[in-house]
Length: 189
Image (cartoon, rainbow, N blue to C red; front, side, top):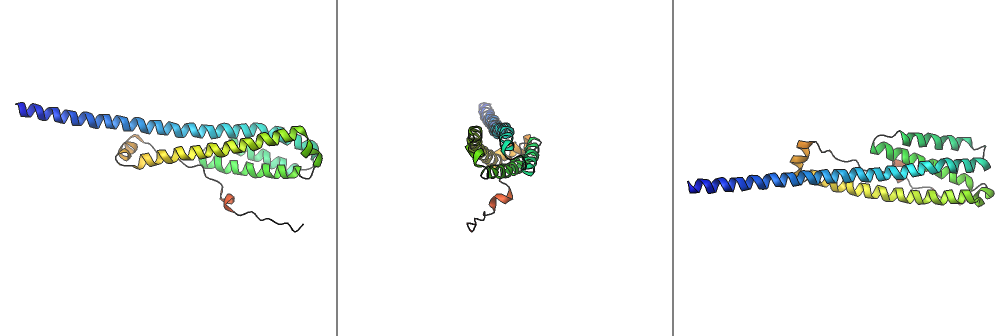
């Protein structure tokens, strides 16, 4: 009877260790998943900050370059695509499109020396550049959190819990395919 009681205690201890390990692994998955969501919301915060700056920048440029309607339209369309983006890849594509439109808008300013000297334009351009840097940092932080989370849900034995409780792989925030193209530089003019 003493051997049976000892065996029962050993089995009970093993079961408790397995249960506590499972609970710890589950809680770790939840924490990593929440970190991914937090980092994604930081990207959204910075994208919203950029979206809030853009109308002021556009209005400032419009005052000097009213005939450049095509660029204003493309900026507005890109902003609304970003606002309606649901997935991480949609956000990345819309953000890239908006960045391209903004780059064209800033390039227009090069043709208007008075605009380039306008204090409001300078301040908005500086804020926009700072926001672009914040977006880049937020994307890096998000991708790091996604990598950590994705690695965790693929490791054994956590993969069993991840599959059991429906933890799915986080998408990376990737640049648009056009970002890989090398820009042409031409000084012949």
